[in-house]
Image (cartoon, rainbow, N blue to C red):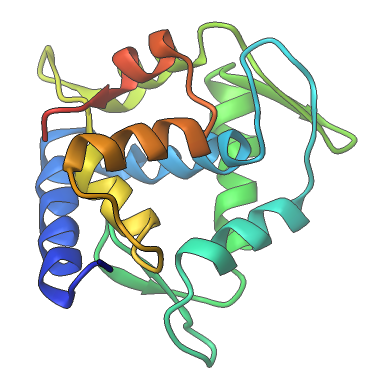
Length: 180
């Protein structure tokens, strides 16, 4: 079974609710670590990573049409330009996620997530008014796997997402709510 339009629409809606519960301006920094995690990044381990990897990430998961605005961002529920991977994702990762927050280093196409990047993300994005709202794992997994045959249960899909994006148990528990 593939994700129906209704299921994808519900995932987008739930991701929008999540964005409203966290620091909205920084919620898209989810992509600052999600793209490298897709490439196998592990905290404290240098990874060969370039903007071309960001482009592949956006092509694989967010392109839904052709033209100058081909990508759809399910968190902001808006169309993104064909340069999203360069002008937004890579720039945000370097300027804020790495340089200002210290959640990663990225020099000469070598990216390293710092060992406590997940805790930094919790403090900078997931905490609002003293309350932590973790990323809803199931809606995000539905979006990211929308073009694949889905398993029978939501728990199996969340497990697939966790494995496909190389999350350790500790990272996953820190960042994601598996029950939503």
